[in-house]
Image 1: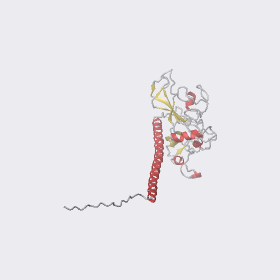
Image 2: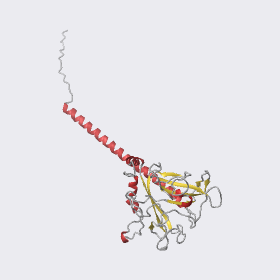
Image 3: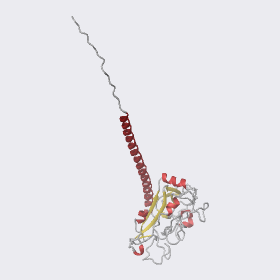
Image 4: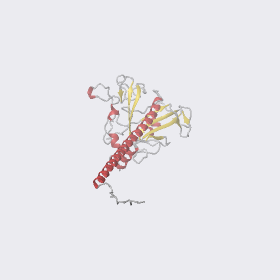
Length: 316
């Protein structure tokens, strides 16, 4: 048997690979994809941080305004008790509806308010009371105070007059809130004791209710439908100078109290505080003083009176 040998030739083998140009194009494409992905992540992170700040401030504002609404709704409405509220005389909270702004220029900044309410509170002894003295202020007593430029709420339990000799009762005119609880109507740098210009509560009933609230303003909605910085109808009571002069009227002309607050998130507040080595530098005081006060107007456009309900919020 004849067998033919099979010749196996050496086949030509070729090795295929990427060229340098192809490698460069691939690297460029990958780099572009990474860059676009990084930008998307960065934008998403920025949007998320901004959203979180809005949610934080909105949540805090809602808590504060809900608390105020409860206190105002239960306010003791009588003409024989004192109200420490914004009015032309007997009130030193600030400029009574005239915005001076720019480093405060003499005004104390945010409004203050103090009144008796049927919201339960506590005595210094810790026992609960069905009535309270409630006050709101943005603390401006001292920049070294941990509550400085934060909204505080005072809630001190009281008894009806004559019920007890050991707990301070709810007082009736001519006794005033300021004469019995000076820290409820003052907001200055003096502390200590129970008399004089005292802004420090010796019983410790002030608590920070709005750590991000640095500006507090309110106005009155009168029963005649007008918004005013004075708590009575000037047309019906042209001679009235305070809630008790020439006659004690209480808040009989007031239908509601409108409140406007300015809230800053903790991150931005920390940046401002860090840059304010002293009050001469930019601080929350500058920002607060540049927010206009409410100015009473009838919304008729007479005499360039344009401040109506809602415009102050829009300006802020």
